[in-house]
Length: 200
Image 1 (cartoon, rainbow, N blue to C red):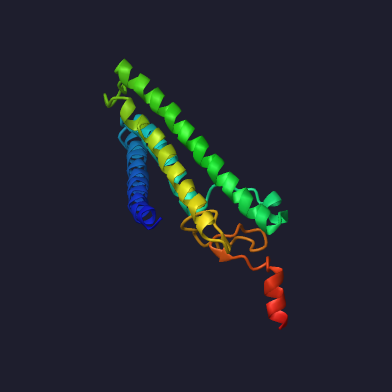
Image 2: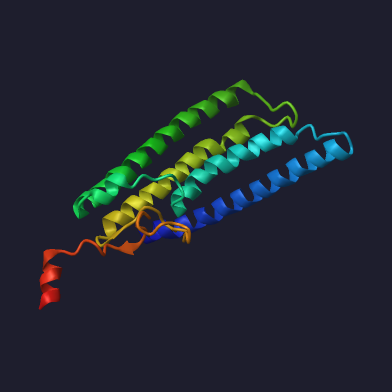
């Protein structure tokens, strides 16, 4: 587990590097294109194409990053009304199912990219092989599966807390009554033994 956590630290740095520079580059290209079209009446031919590629990169690498920091859409209605053991079981099933789905999507997207590579297609403006930007699709799915696998292992290893993500980002605007528990002690589920001990 410690080895996975250490390796996941390198994955985190990779995610942040790719996402930050992709968004920055996308912004520069699109702004430059607008300025060129409005001021010089000449737009960048590759701007739309580059923007589309960078959007693909940000979207699918973002799958992994959002899983890490707990920013995917979550529904807590059933989770909130479950008993303690049911909540743990729900997290086990949820993380396992999500990991399996993302691995399957990794397989499907890899097969698709192999087909694109076989056709030798290139982008019209940049002349870049189409399989290169598409490579981030299975990579994002695979990294996302890795994040949910770690979340699963965290819930198996930690018997006293619920883990819905790895590195939660504090949200000051969130309602604490409906916020999913991340790395917080299970305060509302005291066992009978603990209750007896408290009375004594």
